[in-house]
Length: 111
Length: 122
Image 1 (cartoon, rainbow over the protein chains, first blue to last red):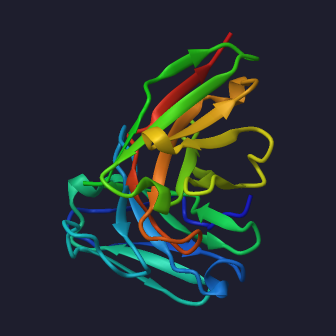
Image 2: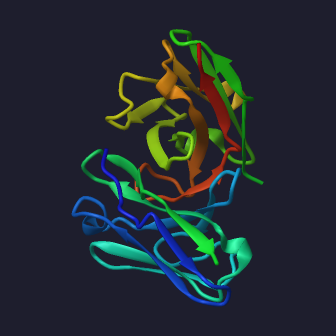
């Protein structure tokens, strides 16, 4: 199944900035599809964090930001806080399925 | 408020059948696709398939085609995910999700159901 590739883990000290990459393909980002990001806290359902490449839903702190290029995307968390410790997933559409694809997931650890 | 409320945890033996549900509220059920997402223990998210309740058009990920069936009952605003013969490898949490906007592709998922844990063990 097509997937979007993320690093398995990233870590940072409180207050620092961490960045998570998400690598797609010609049938995902290259086809013009948007990227979205989810945060999954331990034991809970994923929650929409960023939609349409760089938009934050109401209630999401502006410490979270994102960007996208033709073949990759990234999520940045600035001013890292203990409550940001979670799994993060990118998601897009794939014209080869056709359908949806998720990233492999990245665990963020606050040191 | 748009909500998806899923049925409770299930325990089954290999070879048994199962149907889990996802009840939608707070919006026009017939006009939005609803999808299912699998998360195996300690693993990532996998898109399984999607249904448009308005006409029951269904699309499946190649990984799940023929393994599960997605159906909808518009009279009670409910979508189902069903198996005819479960395997131990089906043990996972299953989430129903609604694309944020109209349309099949190029959407984010919001909201998410609370998840249904399915355990398959002899």
